[in-house]
View: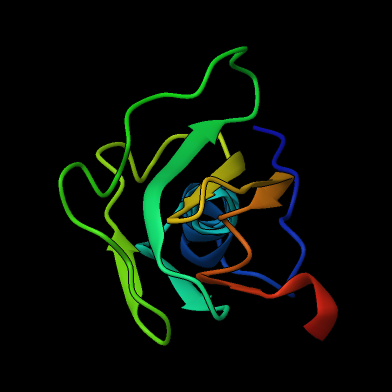
Length: 125
């Protein structure tokens, strides 16, 4: 009977384990990069916010008002809890309506890489 010797560097059990574990590590790492966590929006402007929208950038409309009947006073923040934290959708748009009716919008915010978004008065930027 003819036998081919295995290389002495890695025993079969280690080689087999490496083939099993490597895909799991790669999958877990990619998933962690794409996961969203809770997202905080802070009002560091001089105006009270009466409406606040955070919508997936791929949509053509603003979804629902996060604040609903509440307001976001100067110096306060609101936490956004995603219902789909494992989704690969990372880019969101923000629309802010201030008490005086002024509207401010920002686009393509990566909520997978950032967990805090702060807006200020235009003169402070």
